[in-house]
Image 1 (cartoon, helix red, strand yellow):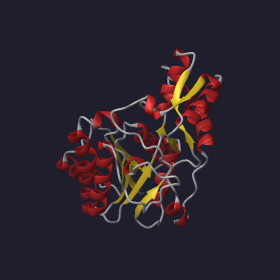
Image 2 (tube, rainbow, N blue to C red):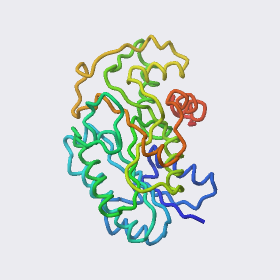
Image 3 (cartoon, rainbow, N blue to C red):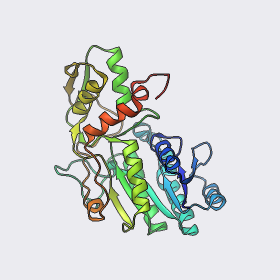
Length: 293
């Protein structure tokens, strides 16, 4: 039986990875941040040697985009050096590696979906740290999969869907930016796709994986209101300039799936269908219901 190790198992994506693998009957060990600090190279190697996984999925990351602007050392320690530690340990054991990256490695100024081979040009500390992590992973483990995704939401942790659900309860109207485009991606769909990739004979390298289609944060917010049973016209459009943030946001985050398709991997469902399925599966958690999913 294939043995799996998931880092960052306490997070949004990691928790779904562990749950799906357990449901499939796989032998899986999930290590949350408190159980494995990937910035500690010795600890990473020791964990890999202790569990001897056949496949490692690195879902551990520093994702506080704005905080990274004033704390680049921590962002790079986790997203760049930590990713390299996981890749080196995995390579030493001869295990397969799937490393999760982000649309933030791009400048966000494109007008058509980013190809996997498009040049990276990150504009934020977070993006630069993740780009450095991609390089570190592929240098330490040339056989690894690096999978970029975007606009992820799920049952665990904080995300845009939960924020919109809270604001729907608290405010009569909500203003959301309408000049940033991307592909909302349900963490459970992403987790399932990453597991499928790891089990495939797809060639190593960089892949993009998001739910299909695209929208703006404004369009996404209106869809969330619809799932909440609220009037979507309560969501009003605004601009990025009206809401300045410490870290610049990509205006265009849509990722192309050329290599995913060429590898014969199953296409991800449209983002709107995924959002509906997410509310059906874990609606209470997405709504912020303290009783759980």
